[in-house]
Length: 176
Ligand SMILES: CC(C)(COP(=O)(O)OP(=O)(O)OC[C@H]1O[C@@H](n2cnc3c(N)ncnc32)[C@H](O)[C@@H]1OP(=O)(O)O)[C@@H](O)C(=O)NCCC(=O)NCCS
Image (cartoon, rainbow, N blue to C red; front, top):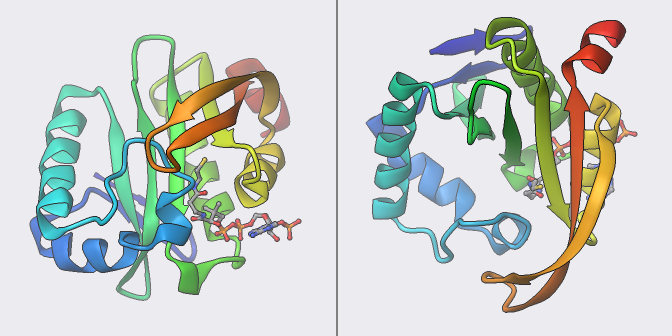
């Protein structure tokens, strides 16, 4: 699958992306803020991600896509845990592309896809305490805080305050 914006190509990952993906995600300044991402991140992790993503797209259970800008992978964005009413949004951007509005633009495209094409009612997201960049992206998109909870974090090996947010289709459609 492929979604296009003026600057970005947001598409299914292919096996040829494995090495580039590994090189970009294997960065603790990214992985520390994610959940369920191995670190170090090796080539088998990338291959397994690509295979799982393509199967999930076929099954309509998740849309974990890569973001490409000028033929280079700039990051990833996804809707996952998709059911009839909702899903979760997640994203990461390679550090050399930070603060250029890419996470916001790619996530906006995924919200449009989720609400308009999949006709979902609610999209949820979460971030770890201290992740101001993610907080800012989500608030710019219109996400509202709904809860916060201390959780064990496998990557940071400590208890971390998780912040949970959501956006409802009624609010999204009203504002877009
Ligand atoms: C979070 C992340 C995806 C943001 O990507 P990005 O493409 O740099 O974000 P954008 O450029 O769209 O920025 C959106 C807003 O956040 C702000 N922002 C970006 N990085 C920031 C930082 N480190 N600290 C504070 N604000 C930040 C931007 O200035 C912008 O605000 P503005 O429009 O008021 O200027 C990126 O920092 C990243 O990949 N982090 C590691 C992985 C991660 O945290 N993923 C999300 C897990 S919940």
